[in-house]
Length: 190
Image 1 (tube, rainbow, N blue to C red):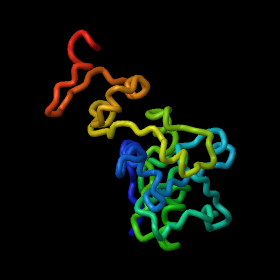
Image 2 (image 1 turned 135 degrees about the vertical axis):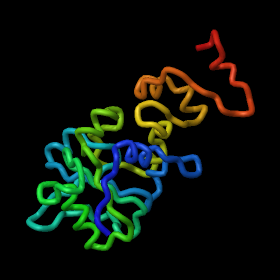
Image 3 (image 1 turned 90 degrees about the vertical axis):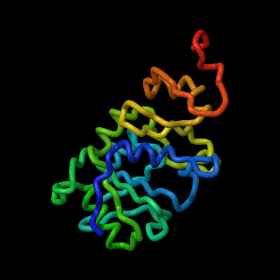
Image 4 (image 1 turned 120 degrees about the vertical axis):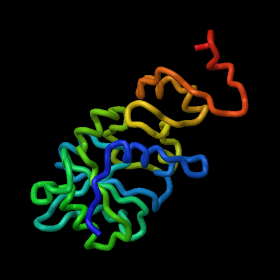
């Protein structure tokens, strides 16, 4: 199957999924996120948990621990791929096709808008960190999932109580949908 374009908020949601009360990115076969920009751009800043892949002639150098055959989600991004009709010029699409030919069992997705659009919308998910230990992956801060891009999120009480998340997502209001009354967000306690 050919690559699919992935809207940036879908990647945001993949990075923030929680499985059994820990970030899904901590699960070995959950996500392979590849940055195919130049090594200098990758070193300067990249999306959390991303690994670097560079082009070598007509093939790509994929990190040895990538295990593309077992990954549930494989996502590739370059600087700015806009759609699937830019195959000749898009490194992201070229890498996605390469990964499919090399044995990916699932569709390889390319981030629409690339790093530029993703990092402009979610600057708090950028990093310079190159290696992640299992302990660090288990403690990655997750954010509420985005239901309507830039407008409506669904999250936990912990998300609702985190002022950093409020600031990053520009949260202006909460809607509590539980059986219990949460007085922390009642009038006068905001």
